[in-house]
Image (cartoon, rainbow, N blue to C red; front, side):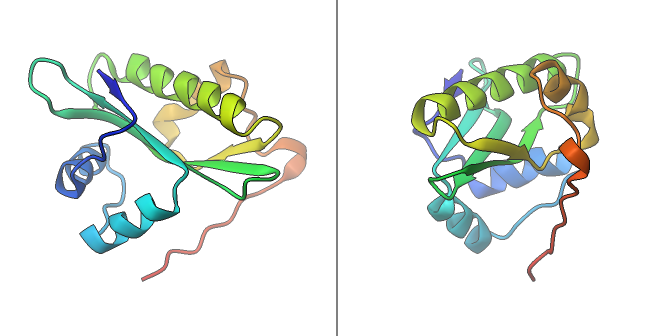
Length: 134
């Protein structure tokens, strides 16, 4: 079940990130992340209610939008879950922030899905850099 209104529990989100071998964050960091996001999408398993996928977006409300924490539960449905999240994220951004360029900070497992959606790795030689705040 795709959900955009219910904010996932930070512990559940960290559990999903950990299963995907991604960095986890403190509850305080998640509160700030959600406050600074324009929206987020979650996929919950219907049978169990467990968090199975997640992505959130930030934007300057002008030219740029960024997708963060793109993850999906490892397993045979992982690629399909990622495809749903990316497709819905692009659709939402096109409706709410038309004309923005979209960048994604995502694990290597998502590259196939992102390329299928038209994303280009390092377009025109642009290289992104990150700085992890403590």
